[in-house]
Length: 325
Image (tube, rainbow, N blue to C red; front, side, top):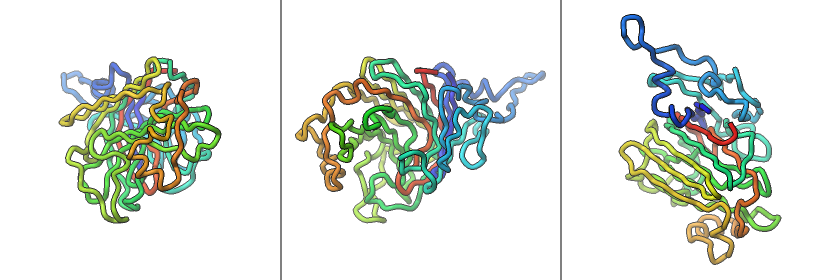
């Protein structure tokens, strides 16, 4: 299955392609040799579904809170359309940093949600390459979610509907480089989910917990961060209940992670990481996770731009989804 997408203000550009085409599909799609043997560019694709031909397996939510459904032969000039950039076709996903939201969420988004749910014991894969083009310049540096956008997720459709994976890009104002990190949200034990919290893992730059000391005082710029417009890739693979993550960017160290989705590391209060005690406990989020974590829950991928807090951004991305397409 091929998929190319992108979003903005939050603005985000995302491009999705199949595993086998991810590095060469753009040249195949967008260039040809003429009768004289000279390579010339082809016209830009008309619709995002010309670039990502499997929208019957995903639903599209737009930045105005509306549900576009299965977006074949569909575009929206403000939120969802194609561009031709760097000799490649991209799908643009844009979402405002404030506006109407969808469902029970407080965050605006333009994103795809996978229709078919799968078990943590199933084989599932999402692979994406992207560039964040801009992020918000307004917000409170003491709030962990400001200046950030979520560019990929795994979401649960059951129980508390929590998220075992959220991939972020975040850049403080005045910095040339931003941070890429991923969060694991606990699947809180019991009926009350108000105590849920995230544990954040840095990929390049900072993690979620590195915040400013005052509203307009920021941490130092990360030395190993990712600049706006700089490509990076992530690969998510679920196999036998284990989530495998891989992050790559030219000139940066490749990072890999594993996380067990069937057995919790945080089933006792004594297991709570120091990061969480500093960031979440002061605001009353001090729960523990059920021992079986996300076992027996239906999971699905989400991909696009999800604005968090006071955020505005844009990016380019390419990705591949294996399961249920």
